[in-house]
Image (cartoon, rainbow, N blue to C red; front, side, top):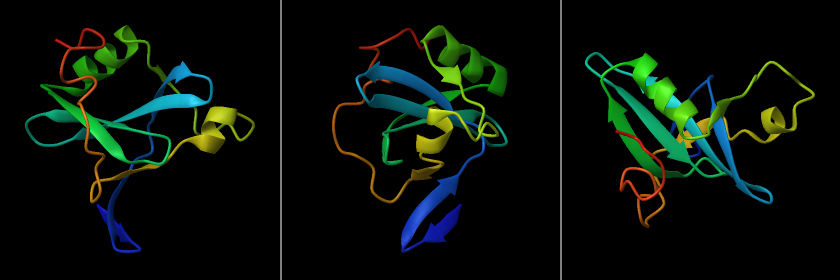
Length: 110
């Protein structure tokens, strides 16, 4: 966790993206802890809008792939998605609205 301009940010170097519409993306990154992993979902500005916990990294990554997210190559300087990837999760100011994925409304996350 880092502080940047007073905001708590979690900088991640592995990102997944789901294109939801014209110039609209949902981004995800996986954070590992001692007993579980958390998938954080953010908008194009890195603002957190949902999260899901899993027992292990492999399961979390598999769920992302099953729900039409794909991993982007952050080392590809010519990739449009690499250029617009938020690169961090703003944990200080999460978006306040319906939890899209953890509600089960979109996708199969169980």
